Length: 242
Length: 242
Image 1 (cartoon, rainbow over the protein chains, first blue to last red):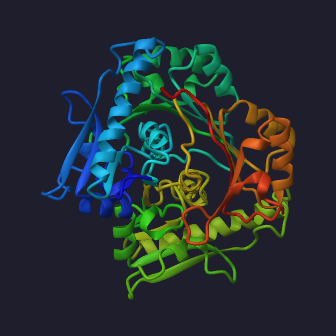
Image 2 (image 1 turned 45 degrees about the horizontal axis):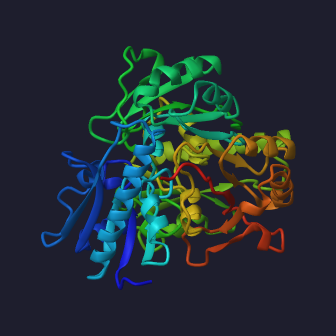
Image 3 (image 1 turned 90 degrees about the vertical axis):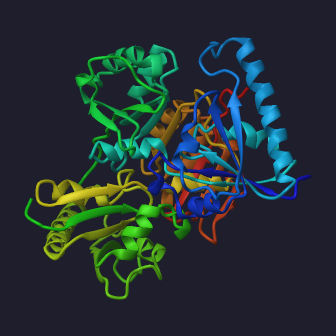
């Protein structure tokens, strides 16, 4: 371990700043060095959650994705660009950690499909890294539906909308409560998979759960197929309830 | 809606009080009426998390389970006892809500396999109910392993150790990242299912994730089969990582 500072991966929760943990709030508000991912030219969702909370003297370290959806994820160039980006990001974090602790802002929970994991892996052995879990976006979304998500012996399954349609349908059948993340342009395919699995009528659509502008509706009532990154499809379990 | 007060189901997170959300902390510390489940003769895990945080003038409303593991869950008497208990608990909450807001303390996330759901269902139309999501015990446990839980397109599946062995093994195969909750006396069965699914070597065992006395080990290194309620088995996903 070469850097004297600890690199903290801090889960910020689903978007509402009050859903940050007390520990996250303390670490973020006291941080002298704050890093976060963002898309070039955008403020970044993680940075937006902590707006007004950073100390005036904090140094900000934005880590700007070279690509997001411009190159297909299957393309070699996508992987190459991301690998170079993560390697460079790690060097920037290590340089900052030379001065003291660094807080990396993470939406949701860092170890649950989080971008921080790509840094975590590369930091192993090079700095002390600590992770603070957070409330997932998924939890905020099922809370927004106003109905409990999974009961008793229900099997809960979490799927990415990026999977092939047949895989989605088959895995949906393996769950009692189903969450589908990473919708974006995959929503029409997710709708077809839900229909194949016999779940179309029970599905909910939630956008930006916990945010002031959250949207919650039956998927059947959603007449378009526009779905931002922070949206999810949920099918509630119906397990044992005395 | 008959009661003037709001009944809040407040997720407290996995056990470490600092992993409570800022909103939960605020609601709990300002509450005048605080309810929580517990086993008769025990302090109760939810109440323990908020120790030292309640206002001195707060009225406490302990809801004491008539049975936990004394009667098999399949037995009619179990369901009867629980139904009567939930019905009585709801009346106590409604009476308290007649005086003003009531905070119900919930471990983890209320809508994720939480006991509060049984009250929520029965309160519909009788009181205004609001729910604050929390960090799940599962998140704290995978964070405790020091390794990211699910990556890229990984399918995440959450199973209850109470399921039959063949179901467990089959559903484990449907996931890339696997969490098994409700271990207790089911741990030997869960071990056999993991072996059948070819996952025994990759499984971790975590007890009381985030608590001061948390235990984290490879399941293969756990030489006994004693597993408290707040323990979990985890198999990390190995999905795409550039």
